[in-house]
Image 1 (cartoon, rainbow, N blue to C red):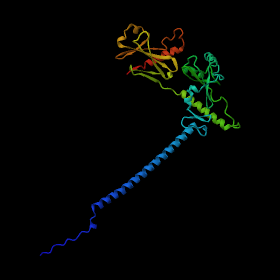
Image 2 (image 1 turned 90 degrees about the vertical axis):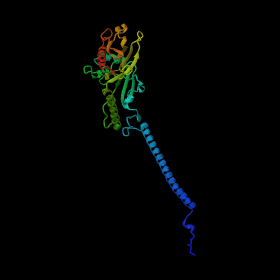
Image 3 (image 1 turned 90 degrees about the horizontal axis):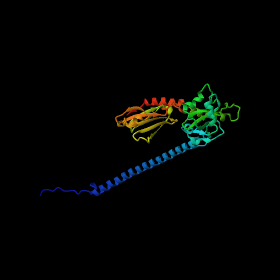
Image 4 (image 1 turned 135 degrees about the horizontal axis):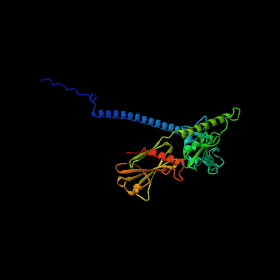
Length: 346
């Protein structure tokens, strides 16, 4: 009988059961996953803390800036931020914003504008101005005065009185600064006195105030002396545009109606500085050009488009006629003709 191989029993320690393997995998996953979660939680907490700190820092900066802007402690040594200016220890809006903020001006009939000279037109005006409304505003020692523009002076004419070498108007007094359609703005300089002497009490403070006032005067003068750019008006509905001289300022556009003839569409374009300075563009359909009303209407032809015929009138059309002899109307007529030369169709 042949010998049979003897089978040795296998020890269970050498071949772990499937359950043991699964338990090991699960435990490993839990340990690794827990570590990742803990690490992510720590990162999130750190990020949240950093964000909170950044927000607190930013809020502090905002609070500091706000305090600086509104601080009553501002001075020449500690000026306000940005364009804000220090006025009586408080930061206020930029100079140019205050100059044309008419609500800041207060009635003050004790102040007198202008100084009489050999120009009788100017003398007559200041007599009227100094018996009417006068409102003042003090900016760091610079005094501004507003009076009504009784004579509808243009800015060129108003400011020209100060530059008249033959008349010497306004020497030592409130001088012309700028003209608006309804008001005149005068400036009185920085106190009009000499610089303080070193031995005077509060010499340093007085010099600082004088320098601040002169800086303010320079800012205001520069604001009004900076040449303005011409203004272009475009009408997209009828496809035309016009360019107005800088002296006309902003252009006010309004559509006006002729109660006697509804076929004329009219747009009046008026200078912000003078309501008498305007150009009116009249528009009719091409097929209505020969209508007797259009033919007889007191207007000047400009040009045609495919659909429309364009005409114009102006505030200087009747220059030289009785009641309109003033040179102003001749000037408006010439300006209107130059403006019409810029008329273009889109």
